[in-house]
Length: 463
Image 1: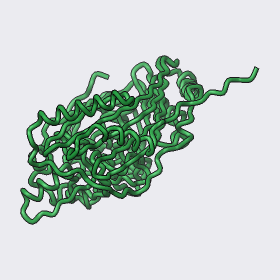
Image 2 (image 1 turned 135 degrees about the vertical axis):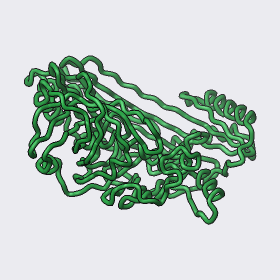
Image 3 (image 1 turned 45 degrees about the horizontal axis):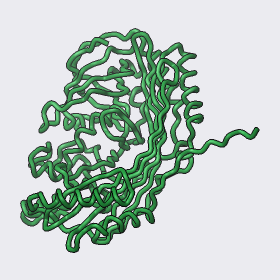
Image 4 (image 1 turned 30 degrees about the horizontal axis):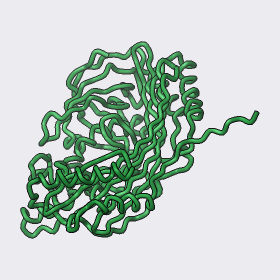
């Protein structure tokens, strides 16, 4: 008997199908009205494990159509996950009915016309082709690491494919496809733990088993953690820890948040707020970044220097925010930077492709040059305490170590911290080469490890 050949599901959404569906939508839109559609299709497959065994394998395929209609500066949106003719007609009628109920928006702009987008390659057949059996085999290797180390493992290993399209009645057409492979693993001992996470569009660019070995080593090395008094310490933040903390800062580079006085940059744009060695871009085209080359309005994403050698250099703008900025700031010439969200929304815009410039100091060199400090694997449960100085609180987790005389020493009981992100970026004394990093509290970034002076730990936790 011939063995069964297993195949993985494939996306159906193509530019041609998107145009066909747009034509169907337009048949139900009255003359003089504007219309925009957003199409999204995703296939996600995940293998979950706990207690050194696979506990779940799930797969999901979803398609959605979102229709925005525009009438006399009024707009509203309706969505459906059915693409038959009757469902499309009903969704258009709902959008039109809701639009007629809205008050005119004096800030509403005409739909944008055709745009040109730089090409990006973020869809890999190797990732789309991963089968449940192949994911299970990788998880099996991860679990074997745990069994050999006499640890308990838990985590996930997933692969996904997605496609999106945005078209409007002004002639705009945008299409994007990508894939993603992601793992997360926690290794548990009696009173210690280790953790690792990573993702990439190309499954061949991640190493779940190697990361599991590093997490296991951290769990073993931090066994029987000692308690260290809270205080201000030199801290070495691994990339995931730096990412999750600083992710809270970059929402403040939204021009709308500055206009609404919700940002820590209110009244401070253009000022030197950070250390000379801090330079940050939002760059959707960086080779380690992911995401579409256009925003929720179909505007091409621009590379924006957010922090230039410590200076809060630029903000990001959606179309309506740029217009409002120019009205409220005489002589300004702000333009949309391709960072807006789908309309209508109350958020405006945000930079989502953060790239923090690094240095030439490796993590090992940071440790070797530290007389006394703390190495932090990651942070969690981070919350904002005070928005203007950008004081954040949270806790260390899954691998916190004392560093003495240039060497990693005992594991430490975890700390709670209260730390200003602005002060932190004034106290960075060394940066590694940046890497693509994943955390739990913020979106993925390209970020270096950081050695920081005077990091403020306020209390010791019970674990």
